[in-house]
Length: 508
Image 1 (cartoon, rainbow, N blue to C red):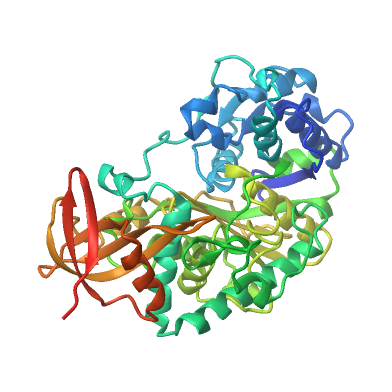
Image 2: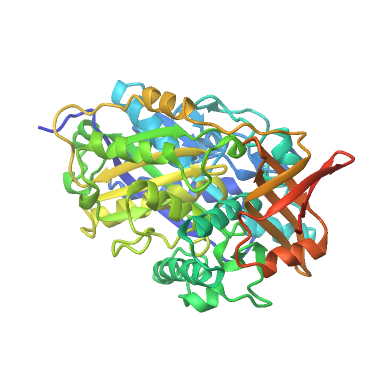
């Protein structure tokens, strides 16, 4: 017996534009994919059944200087254009976890009867945005007023402390390399061996993107192409080359349509086209990365994945396809370690090609992953799929298990609070914001510009076991770190200069 209140996905759509047309607004993009998701349901009057529209927030919302150029409540205009009468209007929190987070919240609302059918939409037109900033084209017609929809969850919270922000840890291109260099040390890899591992992992992802018509980069890159530094593939944040970084400058949109199994059958949708959300949950890591005990771990993600698999009654071996959030290689490796999956598992780690190759459309990447997973399940290429989505710096985790078949018995939401309490009560490291003196390097990165190494960031331990962070501006020290094969464990000293904190190597 199928629980008629089981959440199901009944319509999907994705689109990629490559022409950078400033006349196309984000709302235009959302309208197009939402209309196609409705058509994909196969029900002619589907608009009459939709009573909720949820939107993934634009990544521009994180920057007050440009947020006003983007629509505040695009669901309102999309509802008008698609003749959807008086829907609830919702939006998710900022973060790459947002699409899966919203799917999880909509599933709960559908199951409780708070809505009967929901349209979830998301778009980013940053390729066009950057082109317009360069050419001077006006984007004034993109905005749509100041009315905001209901924001799901607890709202937005700053991802970094003041001390972290002062050292540059608010930029993902600086933070994820810290995880990567810690991983290299933990694996006891030489720098060259580890770089080749990153190249191979990324190459396999690019092979998926090469066969995906929606991918921004439809080219298979070799491991050497990805790991070798060149003028076209420079280092962004050591050790990551450009081809290991998510590509933000894309024009992409996607949408999915959700309802319950009972409603889908009632309106005449073929049961074989239903894809079931067997389970979904959301868990945050210890919030500030400088307080996390082990920068190669993500215990909250591991708990979230085990919870959804247990709740869905599906073993890891029975998952046919995965899409692990892939903004940087460290995110994929850490997810694999927590899940118990090899990064080179024959089932693959992405169904899209991943953020560096498929494209990283702001907060909306995982909605493309969800749409692609639904397609694979519908077409019989997978029975069960797992999607993980990550916000900030391996901070916010949202996970979903999708299946061609419903679970036995009544569908129930997961109570994640006990698991969240376990994470929150776990071991922490105390950050000393004003420490000066000798330290030992725990991990590090060096940011580059087009002219070479620019600035370093060091995370270190003090003799008493506290943590300290500092920058490196001295080019001699930067070059010394780049010349070393093993930096972690190196002794150094932190000193202050005005309001800034700097690291220098201690020579015996």
